Length: 141
Image: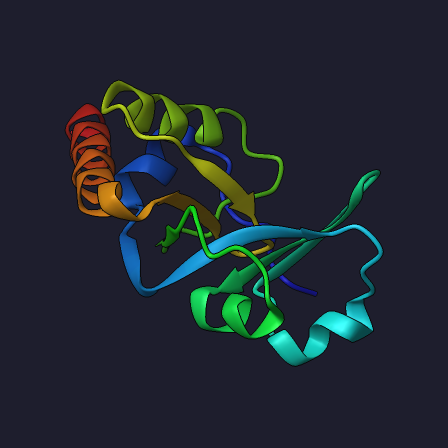
């Protein structure tokens, strides 16, 4: 059985290492979509909503699927194994990015959290998250 990950917010923030994808992504919807039909486009993520199937596709695969390729987002992955039951991590990340004027679309997966930020603000987002982690480290010391 897989480990559940950490729950101590200060430790999670202090130990997180953010990495920025080179690839850009779009969020798109397929009102009558099926997972089987989307498989050829290698979705990074899927989520069923009342209105349809939301997919996160690379720009390249979105173009092949014939869907809008704007707005574009870059994925920041956090190299810290947080529990899905950790309290406050998403709020702390969102707050740091909001203070920098950056929108955040957070996807929590089993092992890591991933934040999709506007492509043009990706570097500023990395700076904001690195500062958040530095502050947390200072708080532990």
